[in-house]
Image (tube, rainbow, N blue to C red):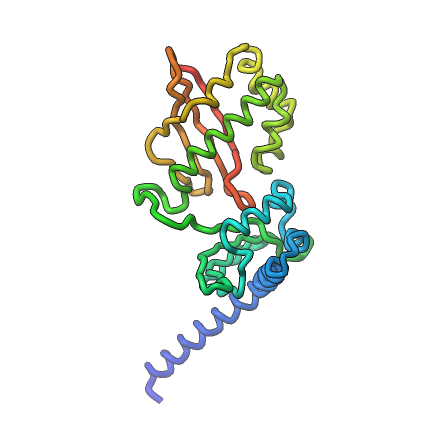
Length: 258
């Protein structure tokens, strides 16, 4: 047999072996995804939630999960196919699509973590359908969604500032941030604003103005900045988010009157 033919066969064999290894080590994630979608198909949201990682469950109750699945037509699940599989230690990812009973195709990405030896779903991402700006990073949500994130975070912040306790605000941020700071630490961090006696609720009646395009850094952190058109001085903000579970959750919050 020709030497180059032998080498070619050898290369093909190595590639085939590599694919087999990836499929073997990611099979547990696929099994978890299949079990999750089987429960979703049966409308058993409580059971489906059992396949989520602890951090995911901490920030997502059954109603929130059901709403997400319903909005994305995922409740109409028929079957899933995975075009890309990745694994690195105790973390992994499945990239592909699901087919609905109506014949539609929905792109989807699922991230996993290993907890007590079993693969659990850390996050589920479904790209927003429809027209979107081509200038922003594909990983960033649409501009209207960015504005909605800013307004909701500001509302939650104002509730706590008015109540002179950051407990409510802390309950709405990412699990990652909650693990880093207690309510008492946030009370101390925002002490000056809490004691300022300003009427922050006026911001709830205004539309925030975003400063350019939001960016997502190499660590997956979404940074949204801008200002509220208050007079005589504008209220500037920088808000940072990380994708946890099924939504962007607040990771950093800065507000300043200039």
